[in-house]
Length: 305
Image 1 (cartoon, rainbow, N blue to C red):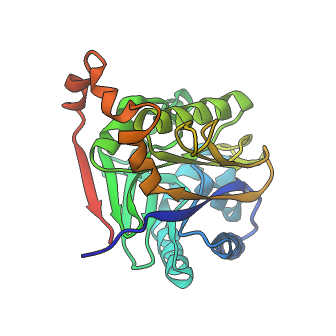
Image 2 (image 1 turned 60 degrees about the vertical axis):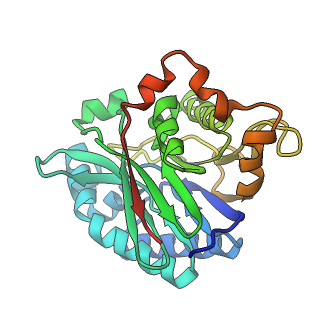
């Protein structure tokens, strides 16, 4: 029987979108970031939403300056991108949430997909479930499935950016056993950053779990997709005496490239559910309509151990 750790160290990237000249240059950058993240002692590295769009610059102005060409080209690189992160995960002995990007469906439309890769070579995938207005304008398609990942670090799930602002999505994941919620984000303005931050803090409070945000940062005026990026990474827990008075385990400085790290204590978080100052996790079903809503959110658990 696999023994799960009581604590893990998580590292969340504040990741700049750069004008990489070649795919090889992009690989060098990612390899450097993963090595630096692993050097913090982290078991899990989290990269942001739409970080994959950075690859478009390596393909020339006809690609990065045109939205449709960007989506098509970056989607076409998905397999190679995932394989490269698998190699890095194995090399450094870490789990990695790969920076999300467009992935082509059979009908030709694109979903916003984030993959979790493990040192053992397993891959799990979550598609963004609720699209922002700009993604709808892009013609993106919404995901259809709520996924929880069973890993050697414990059960975790991903709510991509805007998804983190919807409580019932996270609750479905937590009801399926997720104790850590990964929130990759790509937000243009400070207001968008604070929406995601507030969502992550709220989901941690409601479910008495840990949440992790990872943003893209900096201007990429060359990009037709991600020209402005604002944010700071954070690792959040319920605001409880003896855990964190404000719910913040760690938080980065706005718009500065960095890894933000903290130790997440799952055993302590579990104890909060029965012995904390409040019982948000248990009392969730006292909300009128909560039981009915829970019944309409089937969740798939994927074994990545």
